Image (spheres, rainbow, N blue to C red):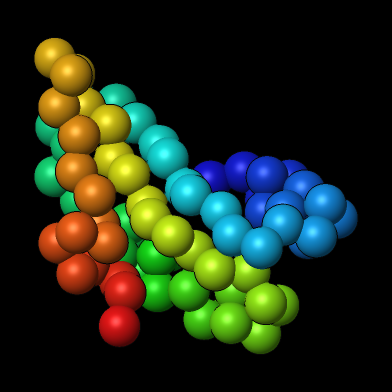
Amino acid sequence: MKVSACAGAVRQNAPAIILVHNQPSGDPTPSEPDAAVTRDLVAAGRLLGIDLLDHLVIGDGGRWVSLNAKGIGFD
């Protein structure tokens, strides 16, 4: 994840963000590091007043997974 993207959300006073990244393997199954980053960003967002709406993992063949829909990393 690029830290500059999150810093941009702070600089722009964004009320919310959606994190999206692709898996080099092509398999969109969320990993434990994906879940950990999501938990950390949800917690940081609470402190900063920026909601993390979702974290999408993109795979090949048009496949993708929403961590929010799966309840991974979100309360």
